[in-house]
Image (cartoon, rainbow, N blue to C red):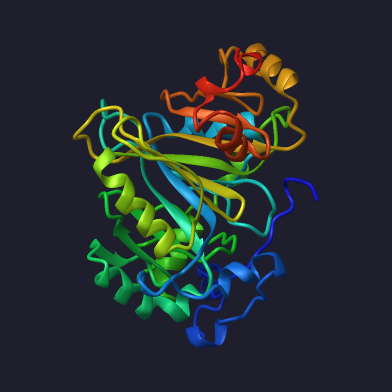
Length: 354
């Protein structure tokens, strides 16, 4: 199976509700089958001490506020072959990988000139979200999560135990999931939701297409969530206990505690923040590309003037237009770092470093 061949499971989507505008929302609901490869995880018994579990399966999107949204949009499109699916002139949605899966980036403009770029949140896809909305809220309340609020009509948004904003969403690729949709799509179907969606489609044809000479991203490799060392244990418990992630690497102790959490084809890295006392943040994420060849990838990045740094035999790190650390990776990076590199690329064998 190629890296880009993914699996899909989910329920109702905003796209279906928008398409069915004027028809009762209940009539738009459709059940999709749970793939065999994911069935065991979805059907796994709940841990007795952790309450109800809602396993995360996908990364629906990360939300990146850039200093120049159009420049960042074009950078990700050109380098990773991402598809532009929505753009209203102020913000955009990019997708990549299998066309039936919700791998994506929402790129917006920073609030005001001079503000730094920031990843404001990331959204995880989970099975049967619509049916489980009340139970999800009850479990978040039981866990004492703060700032729990609806994310439109099909999900929840809340702060995780360390205080980072998290969205749990349906895992279906959905053209009507777009930046800023939560407010106009608080009620679906609605004229406000439909109009805001259409606003991001009307001028797509006028935006120049990518040259098609870049890599082809198939999925996220990892997202690095930096939190204070004191919060890593409770973060691990939350993401494993409520979102069903599996620990594939763990380093405890007072110096640089680290946890790698696998879910679906993705990995969440919990690392100690570089600045003690700082709020949780994401400034490093990576993409798996098709047909990864370490030497050829490095040469192409160098040709593009991106000054890549080798991050083991399975990844190169470059900076996006705002200095975000972005990995161009092969499949299996997280497992390689866990097994062979003590969780960090600088500990990989000398022959892998560049």
